[in-house]
Image (spheres, rainbow, N blue to C red):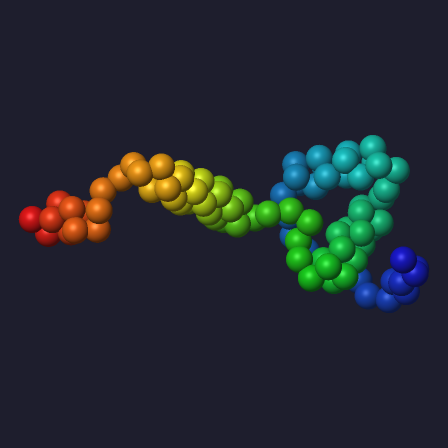
Length: 95
């Protein structure tokens, strides 16, 4: 990737402990905070997405996977002759 001109400074507030731990991670990767944050920004701008799932998105992915598993199991059960007819389901639900 071409080297971008660093022509803007942006300041933000964060938690001191979070910042210290992030600095340690970047340092272990031989990066300073500027280089690490610029890598993050370049990824987001280039890929159009975050390099990780938000908690909400991760929970949604888990729920979707669970639903897909249930649907697959139910289809398999139906194909194996297990389950009940639509008429019987209506009777059970509607009385």
